[in-house]
Length: 117
Image 1 (cartoon, rainbow, N blue to C red):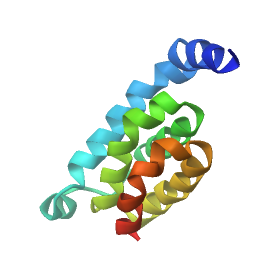
Image 2: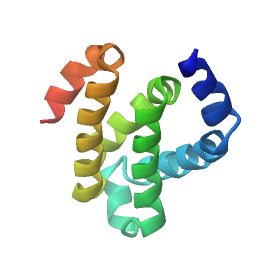
Image 3: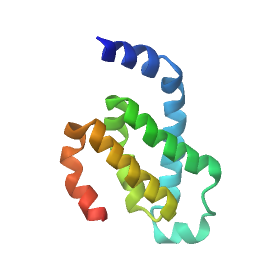
Protein backbone atom coordinates (compact mmCIF):
# COMPACT_ATOMS: atom_id res chain seq x y z
CA UNK A 1 0.00 0.00 0.00
CA UNK A 2 2.84 2.40 0.83
CA UNK A 3 4.40 1.63 -2.53
CA UNK A 4 1.15 2.45 -4.33
CA UNK A 5 0.86 5.76 -2.49
CA UNK A 6 4.46 6.61 -3.27
CA UNK A 7 4.12 5.72 -6.94
CA UNK A 8 0.89 7.64 -7.44
CA UNK A 9 1.32 10.76 -5.32
CA UNK A 10 5.07 11.33 -5.30
CA UNK A 11 6.17 10.01 -8.65
CA UNK A 12 3.30 10.21 -11.12
CA UNK A 13 1.51 13.33 -9.94
CA UNK A 14 4.20 14.96 -7.84
CA UNK A 15 7.46 16.71 -8.41
CA UNK A 16 9.29 13.68 -9.76
CA UNK A 17 6.58 13.06 -12.33
CA UNK A 18 6.82 16.60 -13.61
CA UNK A 19 10.58 16.60 -14.08
CA UNK A 20 10.93 13.12 -15.56
CA UNK A 21 9.97 14.07 -19.16
CA UNK A 22 12.48 16.93 -19.13
CA UNK A 23 15.25 14.67 -17.88
CA UNK A 24 14.40 12.03 -20.50
CA UNK A 25 14.48 14.64 -23.25
CA UNK A 26 17.89 15.98 -22.19
CA UNK A 27 19.32 12.45 -21.92
CA UNK A 28 17.91 11.48 -25.32
CA UNK A 29 19.38 14.62 -26.89
CA UNK A 30 22.79 13.89 -25.39
CA UNK A 31 22.53 10.32 -26.64
CA UNK A 32 21.72 11.51 -30.14
CA UNK A 33 24.74 13.83 -30.15
CA UNK A 34 27.22 11.25 -28.89
CA UNK A 35 26.14 8.10 -30.72
CA UNK A 36 28.43 8.27 -33.74
CA UNK A 37 32.12 9.11 -33.86
CA UNK A 38 31.57 11.99 -36.28
CA UNK A 39 29.10 13.66 -33.97
CA UNK A 40 31.63 13.60 -31.14
CA UNK A 41 34.06 15.63 -33.19
CA UNK A 42 31.42 18.28 -33.92
CA UNK A 43 29.56 18.25 -30.61
CA UNK A 44 30.75 20.44 -27.77
CA UNK A 45 31.45 19.01 -24.36
CA UNK A 46 28.47 18.26 -22.18
CA UNK A 47 27.32 21.24 -20.23
CA UNK A 48 26.61 21.04 -16.53
CA UNK A 49 22.87 20.91 -17.24
CA UNK A 50 23.20 17.77 -19.36
CA UNK A 51 25.47 16.07 -16.85
CA UNK A 52 23.13 16.94 -14.01
CA UNK A 53 20.04 15.83 -15.93
CA UNK A 54 21.56 12.44 -16.77
CA UNK A 55 22.62 11.92 -13.16
CA UNK A 56 19.19 13.04 -11.90
CA UNK A 57 17.49 10.60 -14.27
CA UNK A 58 19.68 7.83 -12.89
CA UNK A 59 18.75 8.78 -9.34
CA UNK A 60 15.05 8.98 -10.26
CA UNK A 61 15.40 5.43 -11.52
CA UNK A 62 16.45 4.40 -8.01
CA UNK A 63 13.18 5.77 -6.63
CA UNK A 64 10.65 4.18 -8.96
CA UNK A 65 10.66 0.77 -10.63
CA UNK A 66 8.45 2.16 -13.40
CA UNK A 67 10.89 4.95 -14.23
CA UNK A 68 13.75 2.46 -13.96
CA UNK A 69 12.19 0.04 -16.42
CA UNK A 70 11.27 2.81 -18.88
CA UNK A 71 14.77 4.31 -18.98
CA UNK A 72 17.12 1.35 -18.83
CA UNK A 73 17.58 1.40 -22.60
CA UNK A 74 18.58 5.08 -22.59
CA UNK A 75 21.03 4.60 -19.74
CA UNK A 76 22.76 1.59 -21.30
CA UNK A 77 22.86 3.34 -24.68
CA UNK A 78 24.55 6.34 -23.04
CA UNK A 79 27.22 4.09 -21.57
CA UNK A 80 27.83 2.47 -24.97
CA UNK A 81 28.02 5.88 -26.69
CA UNK A 82 31.02 8.18 -26.95
CA UNK A 83 29.91 10.37 -24.07
CA UNK A 84 32.41 11.70 -21.53
CA UNK A 85 34.00 9.22 -19.17
CA UNK A 86 32.77 10.99 -16.03
CA UNK A 87 29.16 10.60 -17.12
CA UNK A 88 29.75 6.93 -17.91
CA UNK A 89 31.28 6.42 -14.46
CA UNK A 90 28.26 8.02 -12.79
CA UNK A 91 25.91 5.79 -14.75
CA UNK A 92 27.85 2.64 -13.85
CA UNK A 93 27.84 3.61 -10.16
CA UNK A 94 24.10 4.16 -10.39
CA UNK A 95 23.71 0.73 -11.99
CA UNK A 96 25.15 -0.74 -8.81
CA UNK A 97 22.52 1.14 -6.81
CA UNK A 98 19.83 -0.10 -9.18
CA UNK A 99 21.01 -3.70 -8.79
CA UNK A 100 20.71 -3.33 -5.06
CA UNK A 101 17.25 -1.77 -5.27
CA UNK A 102 15.66 -3.72 -8.19
CA UNK A 103 17.55 -6.97 -8.75
CA UNK A 104 14.70 -8.59 -10.71
CA UNK A 105 14.47 -5.73 -13.19
CA UNK A 106 18.18 -5.73 -13.90
CA UNK A 107 18.74 -9.47 -13.87
CA UNK A 108 18.14 -9.63 -17.62
CA UNK A 109 20.71 -6.84 -18.18
CA UNK A 110 23.66 -8.61 -16.57
CA UNK A 111 25.16 -9.47 -19.96
CA UNK A 112 24.94 -5.82 -21.02
CA UNK A 113 26.71 -4.67 -17.89
CA UNK A 114 29.51 -7.21 -18.16
CA UNK A 115 29.95 -6.35 -21.83
CA UNK A 116 30.55 -2.74 -20.81
CA UNK A 117 33.28 -3.67 -18.36
